[in-house]
Image (cartoon, rainbow, N blue to C red):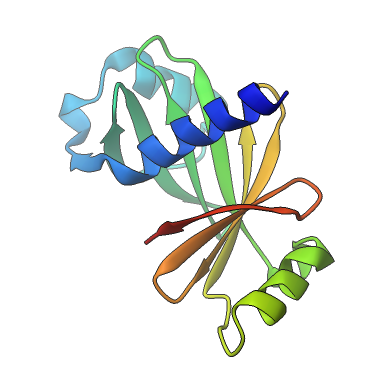
Length: 142
């Protein structure tokens, strides 16, 4: 289980760290089709290439979201902006204790293809990652 967690966050870190904006014409048809099947009513605001995968950023029902799709059209993970009240209480307690005076700029719920849920919280210059229960996992520079 620990190996899986480390591996998952390695993938997450690499996708966060090494993305570049690309034009829609450079996104493979299989990726665009997978997006349209999953979100037929949504329009992509921005495409990014993250390693070998593609991330579509979009607004759906007035909520900022993104989806990471591999070249075969498989959804790897989804990220949905959430209200701070939707975070596990231990996340906000962690911020108050370990990052005094900092305010949360944005919170997202991340679900991977296996159903693993994590939370990402943006504070001044950092992204903090928490597990499903709100236990701190790691910090990355924004």
